[in-house]
Image (cartoon, rainbow over all chains, first blue to last red; front, top):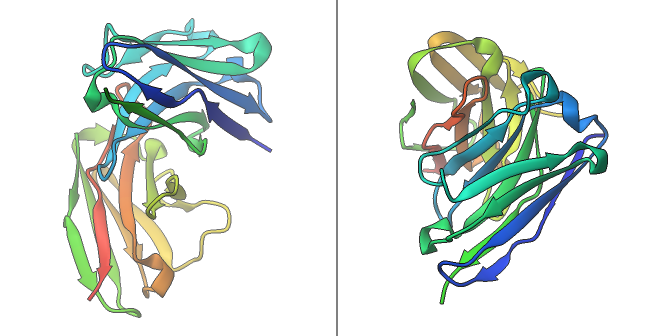
Length: 118
Length: 106
C-alpha cells in the first residue's frame, strides 16, 4: 500500500527556514516523479515544485513564487523526500502536501501545516 | 493554465452537476485528474486519466473530455457531494490546478 507521511511543519518567523520531510512507503521512490503542493488557508491548491525520477536524473523545477528560496531533495535510501524552505514569507503560510505519481494516478499525503508569522 | 467554471454551482440534492475545466493548451488525457475537497481534509482523488474512476468512487461521478476541454459530471447529487472540486494537470511541469468549483446546496 502506498503511503506518504509529511512532517516538519510548524511556526516560524518571517525570514526563517524550515525543512519538511515526506516519508514514503509501498513503492520505490527512485522510480517516481514527486511533487510538493501547498494550500494557503481558505485558498486553492498551488503547485510548489517537482523532482523527476532517477531515469530523468532527478531534475527539479519550481514555481516562480518559491524559486531560489525552496529546494527539493530526496534520499532514496531512506525513501524520503524533502522540501528545504528558506527566507520564508508570511504568504508561504499553508498546508504542504507531497504527491507521488504512478502512471497518471496521483497519491497524496495528509499534509503538514507551516505558519510563517512574527 | 487550467480554468474551471463555474466558480460556484448552486444545486439541490438529486440534481445533475456539470463542472468544466479548460486548458490554455492541449494536454494529454492521461494526465488530467479531478479531486473533491472538503474543509480540513486533503483532496480526494475522483477521476484520473480524464475518465477513469479512482478506487471506491461511486459511479455517479464521471469524467470526459480531451485536448483542452474536460468535464466532471455528478449524475445525481448526494448530500456528501457538496464540496469544492479541482482539476489538475499532472503531466507537464509546472503542474497546474484549476481554481476550483464550489458545489453548494441551493
